[in-house]
Length: 405
Image (cartoon, rainbow, N blue to C red):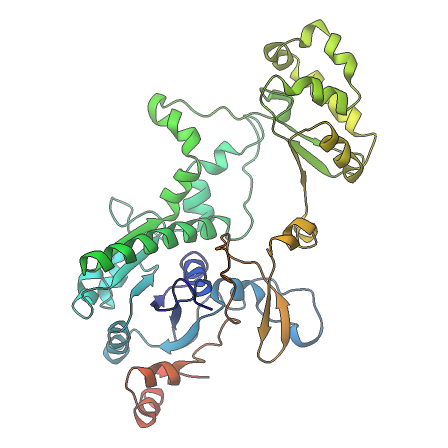
């Protein structure tokens, strides 16, 4: 089967989750992704919680696997001139160079755009940073909790009410969102490089990608400079666009801001008497009495567990969603129908499930090509494809310039 990027080679020098997630998607799309790691490996390896499984996969690093599936790994010492020369040699036949190194480190290791263009003038050079490559804080390292959620205003805007505590994101939410932004930029840059015959520089950051996710708010705030209004459940503008608990402690969320949804909402919950309440005849009246209204809706939903309410909501044409636990999503029939959790065949351990990239092309199987590599697993084969014979690789290993498994 032809994959969209099966003629593209990517050289990747990065770590942790954001930039690696972009390279994983490129691999899913068919690209040959060569991950260049330090001799000790990407520091992300084996730093996250292990899956609660027994048998062959006990202790396997599934979280690292998500962002590194389908790649080949070569371990290189970038601190040596020989190591840097190896990277340049690999870039000669590459289409994309992808990294998350700050500018000063790119320049130190000979990996800045102009330095690599001297090796390959048609290369797409892609960089993902915390705060961008310009400005007074281009030097600052950033993780998604600091640059994506904190600095962008996202955490502050998500507080529950004016005095609510700052929430905490789940691992790599901002990383993976920014990885998608980097993928889209790389695809556009590849097209431009093809048309012009010239190398391209693509950049994105956690900070600016987060701002884009908040663009609906920033469309106003960038104009009036006013702080965003943080609303608790009792302060929501519309009762039919709020979240509520059910009898079993599970929650549901509704999003029906239009006034015409109010009668259907009341009918579904057995609250038809609210239609005759003079205080609740329009959106303003319902907003003025929101605290009492939330209490009334909570009491009504407490009559049944979440899964019993679902058919009733559907019957009344409500736009709603269950607030599922992650473990519930992996068993969701809708997730199964769209192939959200495909399987990967590990060459030693067998099959396991993972999550696919959030895109589909009809009649094209965009799925993980294989499991993540061991550190330096492909050092010898990658160097062989670049013209290094076994004796040369043996010397490089003996001298500590590269490592292999």
